[in-house]
Image (cartoon, rainbow, N blue to C red):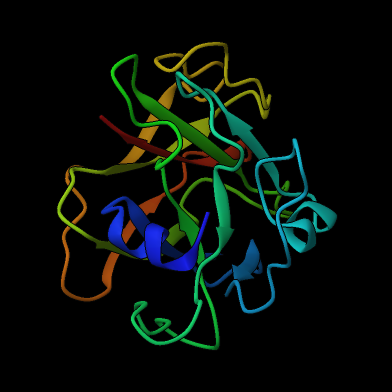
Length: 191
């Protein structure tokens, strides 16, 4: 898909994610600025460099598209990165149609020393007019199943952040405390 078609789709969402300790003890220390995501590998639904860093991407949209997340900053006409030189973007141009909803997943790598009270913070913005929603979900068991189908959440049963709809016009910061040492996932949805 062309950069122009993506920019006009209205579904593009830029993301920057950090997970850090909320207290004085040495706890989780994870940050992803998405400065060098790499190309999307066929059938893996996400950028190669993030996959190499143990991110997992899933496509549960109906119908499925070729990619769920990709390297977001593509130059003039695109949102300026929140910090650094890039961001992770999600869209559903190839999924939108008469037959169904959008459900794209980005599962963070396991975060060492993650404990209850750590804070997950993300920055996001939406480009375009179509409704889009982003959830930050938590898996208490540390399992990484997202179930099957566009409405399933699998092991990610706890909703930490629900931004519905994602606003346009600049980067929005949103934070939540993590309940414990499980896994965290981002879920992009829209219809």
